[in-house]
Length: 165
View 1 (cartoon, rainbow, N blue to C red):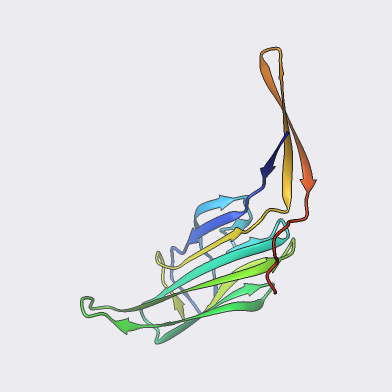
View 2 (view 1 turned 45 degrees about the vertical axis):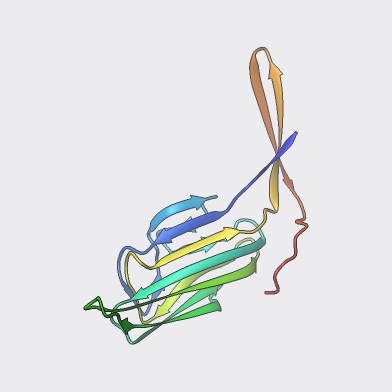
């Protein structure tokens, strides 16, 4: 019998500019475990544990953009994007990226809110679980020339260090 982990990981990209609002990253490139909703911009935790989130905010017009990573409407991470002129571009641009490792409980909601501007295409949100709290026991039986597979759900206590939240 072997164990099959349940993974939660996503990566999504913004396709239209957002100003002073919640950011809905609507172009989903990865969504293992289907926990990210591209219509709301919310990652809903399906399995308690430690998660890592990364968000990048690109801004081409404002003097400064603040992007908060929110867990249940509480800011747990902040980035500030300041625009600057690059000598080879005629456009004034800026970007920033934040990383947060955070303990989530089942049902917690994670999203990003900007005060300023998040430009399309270069603004992204990613998240993944560091360990799995749910595994499936998988047993195989060869019978009559066919494999029979049985999956049994089991919750295990992770033997890893939890981050202080």
